Image: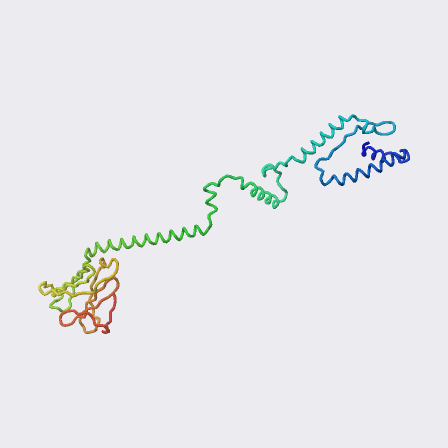
Length: 282
């Protein structure tokens, strides 16, 4: 006897119209059905549905046991299959372009961000342009400083090469400087003395021709230069009174450094340590 059929019969007809035996059977079956449903509900995966023929008679509906067994079995199987297909079918994920736009822009932005996070692992390798956008700003700063250092080194080398080229044109090799001056050594404004300054293998040498007379030439030894590239350092001469005795003294200039030779007794001598001197650079 189908309990659902009995329950519907009990609800549709007054209890006084049913025999007492049927009333007890209805209540007993109803209780047993509830107990079995509570026990089977946690572990139940597929619900079984029984489709009964809705045929009206003079006293009520046709009993479920009056239907053929084959129709009940086929009905249960089809209902179970539909239930399984409904439960196992995975929901189809729609793309952002197929979805309807959300009314709230913030909600739409969150949905687009969620779509990007979901689809990001499935994307292919980024293009070089996309990979370039991910570089950290410190990388660009480091490249900038590296370019600055390389540019400074190249500029320094280029400046040194240009200065050496100018010195080659002006002083030659070895570096040679010549000047005429009246210093009171048998000379005059019309016949001045001639001076030659040489940087010969880092040794500074000054040659004086008093009054232009090579037979009375004098040689003065200057400092010895130490350091890289000092063999190409130019040596220049100038004359001014640095000790205040009224005679022009000789000043030897080498890359900004000054060495003094005092005019005394018709020749020049190196200045003594601690000797008071007053020099004015021109």
